[in-house]
View 1 (cartoon, helix red, strand yellow):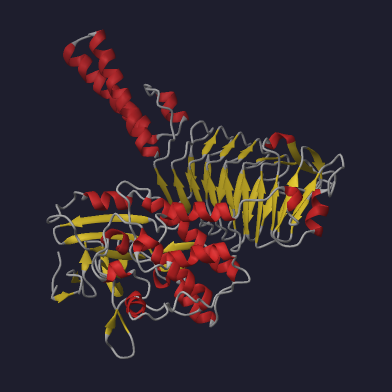
View 2 (cartoon, rainbow, N blue to C red; view 1 turned 60 degrees about the vertical axis):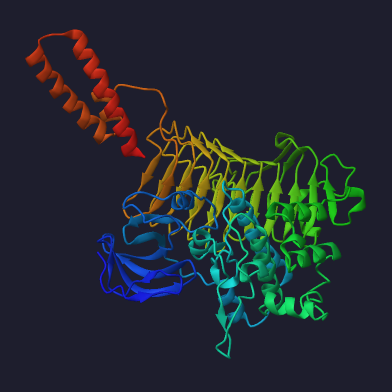
Length: 591
């Protein structure tokens, strides 16, 4: 399959020259990157005529068996996180193991800082830190834990919406034993400034997450200072000579970093693994403890809204308008008839029971997002029909990162939630979005976002509609009992739908217009009850596979009747068997 494989990479992999075709489909076009554990190429998928990333992995098992996924590859391809690039294909051949990934033109964090020519602000750098921390918590929680081993700015891409994503899977798969060297002006190999000393000395193991925490801390340092940190070997040499560790007296924006957070930051940069936090989860727990809200009476950055009086405000919008950025607004139970415009970063929190805090609007969306960031927790949001005959969305998100958490949302006008524009990247988590007069969620005009663990039910039209180059992630949702399809994708829409229950939608779970790419994994689209297909069921359900199999079933029954005679029991048994088979294949066809 391969020829002219005479170039050996430092990792021991055979580097593929340009124009080689892998698996009779993927033509190598150029080398993109070469790491200790992988080589990454730009390739052309000659079947679909599109560019892809082809990543050649270093094997840790015996010689791979063509067509059989080794355990390490199986674990890798089953990872699911918004910061991990989607795997389009897996190739296991006698010559090597390859992943086929989507191409991305998104810049890396290193690219962004070089273009900016100055450090990032504390809020921006810390928001990215929290995204990476969430990814490490997910990876380290796998069994066995997945250690990245290569966290650094050049390996992390940033989308236009500000969402971070790993450039590829090579470090994850490789479990690097020795940190990748880099070259400076003297052309003498030196250790990576983002590698812990245990990695550089070859003591790194694939079960210790603390090396990833070192990479996380040094990446945070780079974003805040604009400079790569001094490598661990140089730091260690200075400490041995009783000199000051140059990273201890950090020149950081301490006016925005509390002393406790500053201490946590330094612990991530500790030379010895035992001096670092035990896990990424421990880091998050410490951060949450440092950010635990004080009682409202002791917090000048918290105001209370009560429609009956006796608090700071009786109107939520007035509280927003009077608040500086970062204000926490607590909403007491009641019915608020107003439209909320979020034009600054605020956190709005309702009573523990969302049904007790109701916000309704008539002539405008109940919530309009205009800020770069905001949060709404535990509210019921309802958009009523207009008095002037115009239409509007229930929640209108045209920009920023709006978090809707444990909210109940409905609309008697247009879509319950509209997400639109390239700057819109919301998070909807554990929300109930139901009984909309149109669709549940409309995502259009190059928008993105994450819809996680939500109920999207009982809408007149589709549960979710995606179009105009939008690309959301929908996971762990119940998208059921909608008048149109569960998910409708058209006009160059795309996305990922993972682990969703999409049963009970009137026409079916999906309608994906030709040419639109949606990655669907482990979704439930039919009930588990066994059934025997009928001609009516096959035709009415629109299942060509089921109808064709039923016709074949009738032909087989006629043949058996001709050969075996009118044995009713045998005919019934055979009918049930073929009917069950047709149902299974029709179900597979729909998936």
